[in-house]
Each structure stands twice: as C-alpha cells, then as structure tokens.
Image (tube, rainbow, N blue to C red):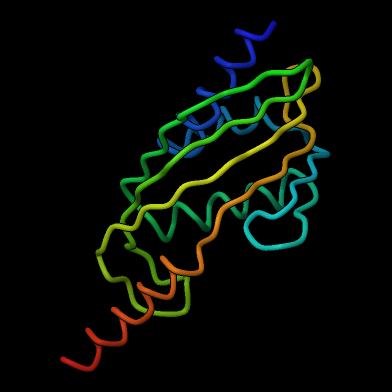
Amino acid sequence: MAQDLRTFTHRWFDDVWNDYKEASLDEMLSRDVVCYDFPDVGKTVGFDDFKKTVEHFHANFSNIHVVVDDVIVEGNRVASRWHVSMTHTGEGLGFSPTGRTIAFNGISWVEIQDGKIMKGWNGFDLTHPISTLKALSTAIAQTH
C-alpha cells in the first residue's frame, strides 16, 4: 500500500500540477475535500473550489515543474516535500505578467480514502516570489 500511495503522490503532482489533466483531478480528489493553507491561510472546502484554485494557478503560471523530493507514507496519510519552478504569464495576480520564472519549496500532507484525497495541509511561502514579481511588473510598466 505504501508504494501505491507513493505512486499516487507522484502522479498527483505530475498530472494535476505539471500537466493539468482535468480527468486526473476528477479521479484523485474527493468531492468533499477540505484543504488547509492553499492557496492562502485558511481552508478551501469542496471539489469545485479546489478546482477553481488549480485553474487560477494554471491561468497565471506556465511551465510549471514540480519535483517531489521526498514522500513518507503512514497508513492512509502521505507527507511530501517538493520544489517547483514556474513562469509568470497571466494577469490574475493583480498586476501584468512578467514572463519571469520563480521557484520555491513546499510540503504537503494529505489523507487519502478510497483512492481520493479527502484532506490536505500545505506549507509554502509565496510572499517573496509574488512580491518580487509585482515589483518587477511595476518596474517594467514604468519603463514603457
């Protein structure tokens, strides 16, 4: 079972984040999912809200490349440590796209039941990468 959940975890990041295969999101995420601290502090409740968050993320960043560094499985719970790089190409962050690549590290902890993520907790800090992009966007706008 542990190997299956390791495979599940790698597939989650590959299919949902790197490649955004909507069918995989439908298959791997519970309709009643509760996700804490993604995208912001607090919680996202339900499949539809989580899907909107994923779509918003993909609308604002391209070339998303998540690499899973470690996976720990305990029963039906999985902890993963990962790093990601992505290019800012969308306008949905409140400022113009910069075309710049950002990178950061994170951790995710999920509970899986019947082959679907039921609960998730995430830890990463986008404050510095986003503030850097915003400052760059402002600087680009001032030069044009």
